[in-house]
Length: 133
Image (cartoon, rainbow, N blue to C red; front, side, top):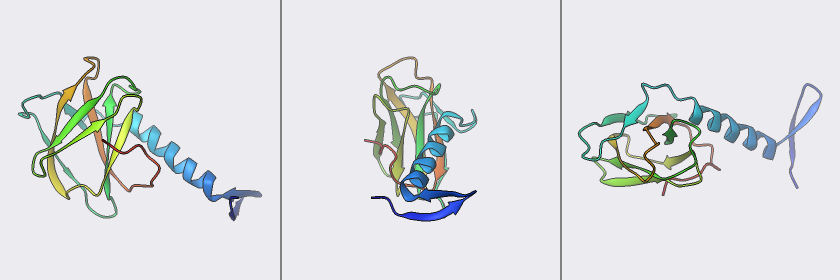
C-alpha cells in the first residue's frame, strides 16, 4: 500500500505517483535532447565526445536518435574505462549509473541503420529507468 506523503492543491500525493512523475519527466528529456548533445555514428571511434558527470549528477542517460526510437540496439563505448553500453531493443533510452566522472564516449555500433545518433545527458538517477546493458 502506498503511503501518503503530502497534499498539493487539495489532493493527496503518494510516493508511487511522485516516482512515476520523475520517470515520465526523464523520459520526456530523453526524447528532447538538443542536437549538440549527440554522439554521431563512428565505428572506429574517431568521432568521440567527453561527458562530464559531476555532483549532483550521478548517471548518464543515452537515447537513440531520432527519438522516439524503440527499434534496434545502439552501442556506446567509454574510451578510458573500456566499457561498452548497449541501449536495448524495445527502449528509446537507458541509463548508466555511476559512470567514470570524466570519460570520452563514441557511438560504435547499431543494428538498425535508421538510428542516426545517440543523445546523452548527465543526470541525477531517479531509479526505475532502463539500465544500459
